[in-house]
Length: 73
Image 1 (cartoon, one colour):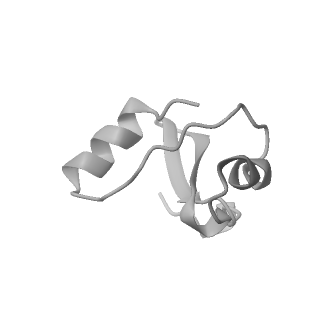
Image 2 (tube, rainbow, N blue to C red):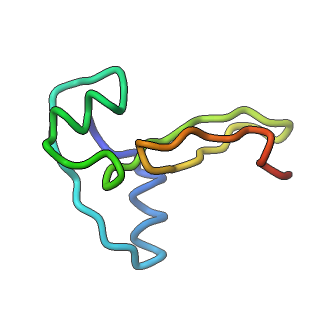
């Protein structure tokens, strides 16, 4: 699966090192770590959210769940 250009641009602008790992299409992040042979805490997943001002993206380790009640405006 391709990396979002928004995520790629942000990581590059912030000077964050990353590696894109090609893998077959998966539907759950737990399957992605198996397909790539990379531990889940070393993979990132993007979670799309819709708010009052449009869409935002949260990028978190694939082994984590996003706590919506913890997000602030």
